[in-house]
Length: 489
Image 1 (spheres, rainbow, N blue to C red):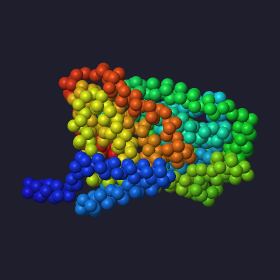
Image 2 (tube, rainbow, N blue to C red):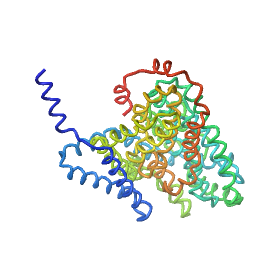
Image 3 (cartoon, rainbow, N blue to C red):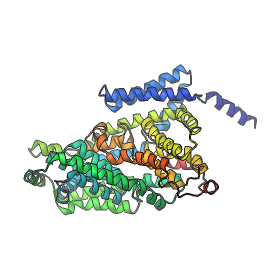
Image 4 (cartoon, rainbow, N blue to C red):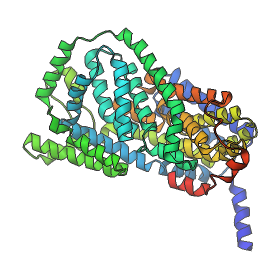
C-alpha cells in the first residue's frame, strides 16, 4: 500500500500540467508555424513538422519538464506508425513488381476502354469509388487504378490536380462504404455499433456528398475539353511494346482482390500481390535475373523505351521511392506522440466538453475535434479512437446512439486525413499520385463535403432523431475504452 502511494506521488510529480489556455496557445502557435511554412514559404511538409517539433521541445524546456517526456512521446508516437511504414515500403515494392509484370500498364490500357474521355473526371470518380468499395482500401485503390488514371490524365493532357482530387474522392467514398475497410470497422467498433448499421447510416452523408461531388466533377470537367484519342492510342501502343500489356498481367490484382474480400490482413495481402507479380513477370519475361530484382525492389522499375514521356510514366516504385513518404510519416507521428505525452490534446478535450450541451454543438465539436487531431497528429486512426472515446458519454447523455457518433467520426476523421500534407493518408496519396496535397485539396470534393453535411445534420436534426431517449442510450454501448485504444492504436 505504501509502495503504491509512493508510485502515485512520483507519477504526479512527473505528470505534465497544462492549463486550457496554455494548450490552446501551443496548438495555435504550432498550426501557425505549419501553415506559414506550407502556404507562404513553400516548404516541404518535413520542414513544417520538424519546426513544430522544435517548438514543442522549446515549450517543454520553458516549463522545466523532464526531457524524458519528449523521448517517451516520440517513441509512443512512432510505435503506432510502424505498420503503416512497413505497408508504405511494401506498396513501393508492389508498384515496381506490377510494373515489371505489366499489371499497372495493363490497368492503364484497359482503363482507357472504360473511361469516357468526354466525361473524364466524373468517370474517374465513379470507377475509383466502385473499385474502392470492392477492395475496401483507399491505399490499394490509389496505388493501382489511381496510378492508371493519373497516367491517362497525363496522356490526355488533363489537369493532374483535378484528376488526383477525383481519385482521392472516389477512393475514400469506396473505402467508407465498404465492410472490408479497416477504418470503417474501427469506427463501428469504437462506438459499439453493428458494422452494417454503421454503413447504412453513413449513407445519409455519403449519398448527398456523392451526388454533389459528381455534379461538381461534371462542371469542372467541361473545361478540360475532349481528348484526341489518336494520340492516346499511340501512347498505349508504345507502352505495349515496352511492357507486358495482356489480361494475364491482371492476375496479381485479382489475387489481391480475393484476399481483400476474405479479409486477409494488409501485409500478407501485399506480400501475396508482390509474389504474384514476381511470378507473372518471370513467366512473361521468360527468364529469372535475381540481380535485376534486387535493384527493382530497392530503386523501383526503370523504363528505357527511348520515349521520355513514356519513361517518366512507367518509372516508379521501389522502397527508395517511398522514403519521402516514410520520413514525413515518422516526423508527423513523433509530433503527435509529443502532443499526447505533454497532455496538450487531452487538456483541450477536457475544456471543449464543458461547452457541448446540445445536439448541434456536440456534432460540431466532435467533427472539429477529429479534424483537429488529424491536423495536430496526422493520424487517422487516432482521430477516430481518441475522439470517439472523448465524446461517447456526451452523445449518450443527449440521447444519441452509437451510429450517430460513428458517422460523425468518419466525417471528421477518416475522410479528412488525405487533406493533411503530413497526414498518413495525405502523404501516401502524394507519393503514389505525384500531386501535392495542397494542389488536389480543392478538388477532393467528397472529403470536403462530408464534414459540412454532418454538421448541418447535427443542427437540423436530419438523420439524428431516430435514436432512443437518454435512458435507453445510457444503458447501451458500454465497454472498456482502454482495451479499444490498445487494440487500434
